[in-house]
Length: 203
Image (tube, rainbow, N blue to C red; front, side, top):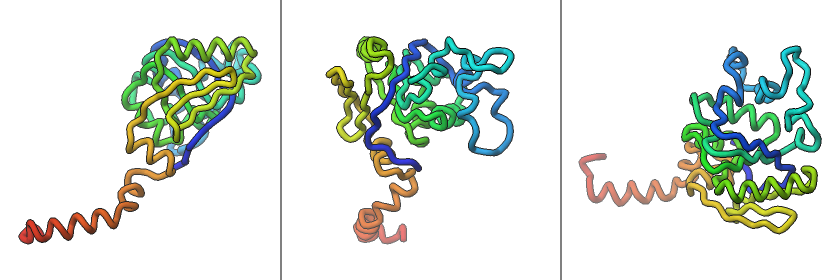
């Protein structure tokens, strides 16, 4: 699993509500067993015109947002079906953090396991960040610090956020649940030794 402690970069505002996983990566592009190649089809029906050419009016086709590492979204981002390829597509495109007031539950959990941090902030704070970004034509850097649990902007905005402890530790260390458990071998052995004395029949 890919680790993340902090990301600083361009933030792309896509302040639409209820962006679901089919809009993030349309079903038509989910065929096959390869776990890669989804970033090319991220937001496909928005990024491309019917003739297949990029739509210049869509924000992720405009510099510097075409190299954004942080996505600013509105409430209920990632709702809909549970497809894990949605966070995979976002990560392949280059995103490391998504800021939204709320997320679809399964999507939220899948982000952590695919190298991205989903940050829940009130929409008023996200709009403040988006306004600063727009005022500087996208060239105002935004930092998401998973270590310090805060979001900062070049213009001086500073917002704290919360994160589930276990998922945060996994992403900071770049490990999955199995590796995280195996890293606690000494604690597990000590527990088994105590438990053996209390319940010898179980062993």
